Length: 316
Image 1: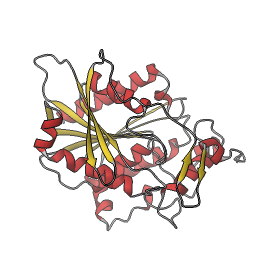
Image 2: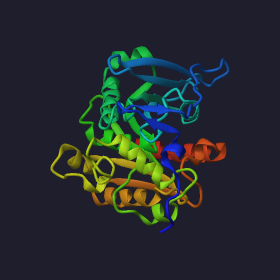
Image 3: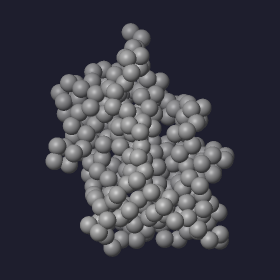
């Protein structure tokens, strides 16, 4: 094993304060308004005023007259549980393109970040967003032409972890019907190192020391990386969440061979398949964690894969 020589605090550009909060020196550009020539409308609506959580809703401006009602994608952004916002330009631009091209109504969730709000806070916010969508009049006031019978949960990286756990926690939510879960390069871990983690221990995008620190700051106090929030292999089959794995419906898992998390993602796919879940796995050669955020061509490939999954899930 190569020695991990990346200082995680310097890599993540953070300082942990005595009160347990973070000083974040890494700042991400935000997008608060769509330009006039944008292909989508956006609308921000509050989710919980006490928690300071909210939703950003995207809807295409122009659709052919014969277009059926649009599927709904509830989207959870990445950022290691400790960074980024639904208003971050990377998340905003991706959701905008996804809404316009699929087409779909996209509901991006501003959830609480760790360590100020450790897990399961983000999961609770994720489920609260699902329940918000159950209120037909509330949703109708925000966006029309949606199809509550075709709802998908989606997240990338830490957002993929959140989408997974939200899917386990979401009970029957009629008239809302979750027909699929989309996990793009989902963020999971564990105490025992995988081959890809050891091989890419000093990865420039996602070094092992950085992922360890994200988990240290995000998991409940006193937990290690074998907590089932981090390691889904440790789920208690006797809990509601544990029993929920087999009720997942269809699931799309995507990732890159050049991502240190790839082995975790393959293990997740095998576990889900063993529970009877209809899994579509799309793992590509090379690449890196977060490749689509910086490569428009790869982002377009991902959108095509997502579109195919939504169409096939809607017709199955």
